[in-house]
Length: 201
Image (tube, rainbow, N blue to C red):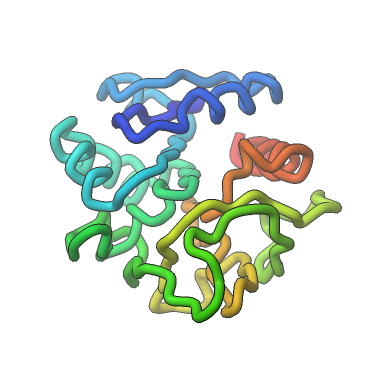
């Protein structure tokens, strides 16, 4: 059973719908026992970094998620804000601590002549095909104003070019995360979700 973390940052219903379509058993919850008994953890989210972290703190989820993902190595998928929150630091709207599972930080996009947020469909360039191997389409849907800057390039699974190369996904051990929204990326996104959960289950 995949637990979709409910921490008040939206995006849970579209993720649930995508997993249901793929016949992947899931539940939306922030209950400690459900999280501990899950087979995988999915952290979605839209909105600001600081609000996301505040909500995780208020729900007593920070230590629980860290223990399950970092210590117990439970498979983890982060989406959009859910990817950003696993970094050490964020800056939205002010500098604050993240979960710290990936070394690096999240900064606002600063792109001369290009619209912010970066929004729409873009082809990604895959650098680690662990979960992209069965995908024939690398066009995914993005909407974000901040981007992740990992300390180690070896943890970058894919990039997207929008004036500069932006990290599109991260892969480290049991942790996989995407800046784009696979649940909103039609067939390419469904294929990615299917491969991720088939690989870990």
